[in-house]
Image 1 (spheres, rainbow, N blue to C red):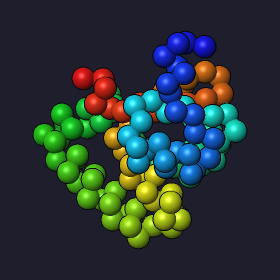
Image 2: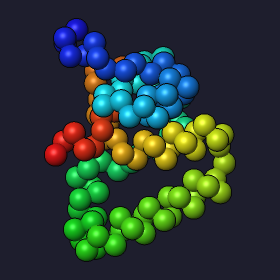
Image 3: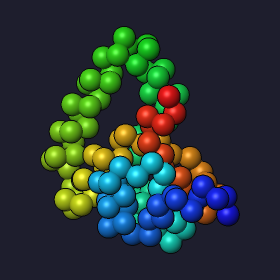
Image 4: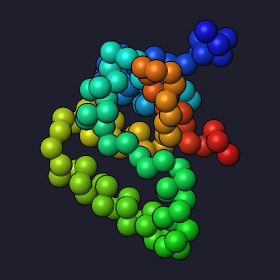
Length: 112
């Protein structure tokens, strides 16, 4: 285990994930046991490179339009209040494969 990995928050349930998102944890590991449920229920943001391409090609208007559409769909869409809150808060995170069975969520601002 990487020494800095011990400070990563490990989310085993939706409740754990929401707690970490509300506390703005810098790094969140979605564990193997929770990963399938997470991927099935969560509206993951576009990867950063795809977001940049869309924003550059449209002069930034896709970011504004996309945010408005997301908020409307999230508000009127199906799903629990908890899941809607996760979908809203996870938009400030990027993600990548952590190992064979886990995902790493990291705050997008840490990349800059």
